[in-house]
Image 1: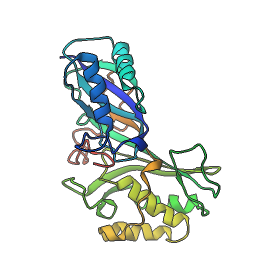
Image 2: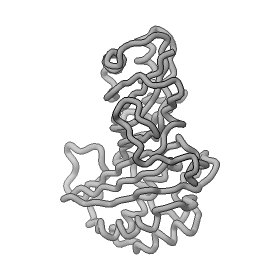
Image 3: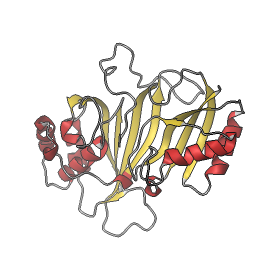
Image 4: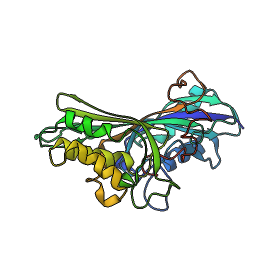
Length: 275
């Protein structure tokens, strides 16, 4: 059966998350309904990460198997036609090897969190968390440095997280300001349930002066959920890219690849924010 890799973007505000559920509309269900309309049979779409309710994506990756082959452009355009008017789009499609797995073949996931730091309300920008108080991005950066590397992230793990271990290796956590926009970029092989939003909410406490940057290190060392700051809302979180170990279609490189000998190989690969 031909297998296709899909790169997908969506506005998560209209969905209760990626994963198909008994109640509420999900991104996976929307894609599976569109894929079934294309091929005439029930079709499973497998995602690289199960984003939580309200979380967005510009670079989610999924794979799907069909009983017959179509051109990649046909797959992309036909699924998009059947997705209307859902706020979901297949940005690209490519036929890939049978052993490509959107979840298990992934080697690094990249998230971007957007904060608009101003008092006036947001008339247009819905993919952001509005914080009216003055945020010190430099203080956030100092706090973020404490979280880099391999740690027990129990403090920043939702109570309902199903991952086997709270240990993760955080490769990147960078804070930048451009005018009113403060962004937090996070990269890792995998994340715990609500880890990114928990870290961002805690860093904002440091940015607002309610915490010192060193308090972030104290919270991490506590390895206890009550030590976490407020969890940032889902509206500002975007899954921007998923990296793979090999190049299937010229889009994904080897940057950020975890080799079999990497100490991260035992982490729960495939789990994403909201898992």
